[in-house]
Amino acid sequence: MATAAHPGAEAGLLGTVYTAIPTLYHHASALTYVHARAPPALFVYGNNDRVVHPQQGQLALAAWTRVGVPSPTGEPG
Image (tube, rainbow, N blue to C red; front, side, top):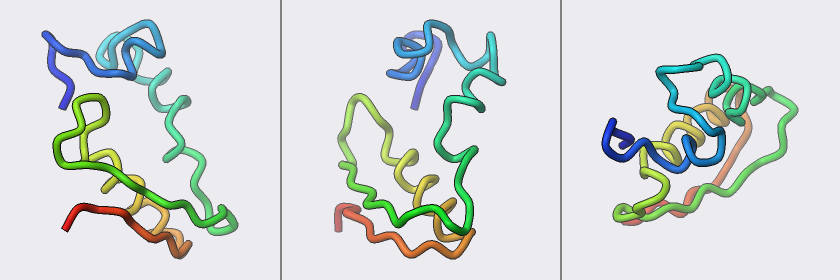
């Protein structure tokens, strides 16, 4: 996960850290826009990914599942 020493890929993309402008992160997140008519999405991630934490894939899958959109996962077994 992102830490003060390693703020994560999002900080590089957005130009700031979450704690500085949380609403920017909210508006930039695909999870904000998930709805029942969203297309299925394939979530593939690795347990040792150094850019995107596996929890991000799990959160995305949960969001799509919560609105009833079937989405396969490439979660490591």
